Length: 101
Image (cartoon, rainbow, N blue to C red):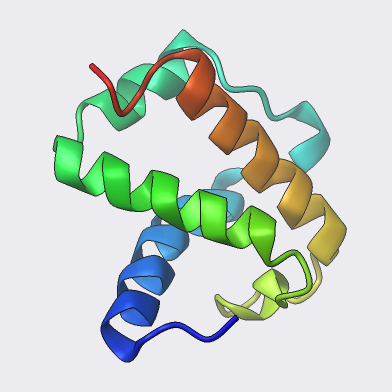
């Protein structure tokens, strides 16, 4: 799927905010999105949360994208694990109504 340059930059920037969290994880297997995670995102302006949600939607519609190449030093993480991580975040956004509050 081709997207315009402005849209592409918006998605990339929002997705990088989420992927940056991978630098602070010991294991993706232990990731859960709970009230603490919801509160982290809820402190962000609504506009930013909406952009992140759109980026998560795009990412999960484009699972063939090499997400592990998006940020330096993430290439050692299996792309499937990153997709699993993004799915957890997206599901948490929906479960805790992160963009509706």
